[in-house]
Image (cartoon, rainbow, N blue to C red; front, side, top):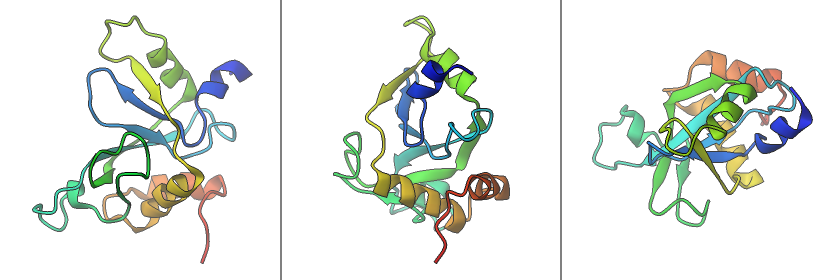
Length: 144
């Protein structure tokens, strides 16, 4: 992977697919491993949902002010976290503007929000062990 492609996709990068309203965040470090990039998405926090529903996951709540795209209380939907590659994300970013798989970049997550999203991987009942292992392997999980 050449440096220019990785420059667009970094830890904290946020983007949205043109066909989906949910903002997504890169929470691993693509500089360390551009073939295994952990992406989580944000969804509206539903206070009326059952406690184990993914859209009521309190592991990482976002409030207005945490990121410019947060318009109301939201949460990270760890149940839909995916591992992809920088190459795949770059391919999606460069698609024809009419292709609904194309992604549009937004302001990156702040270091504090990025830390909270990573921490949520370790506490959410919806996270998969492989996601925590990826972050740990990259040395991205803070230890208490």
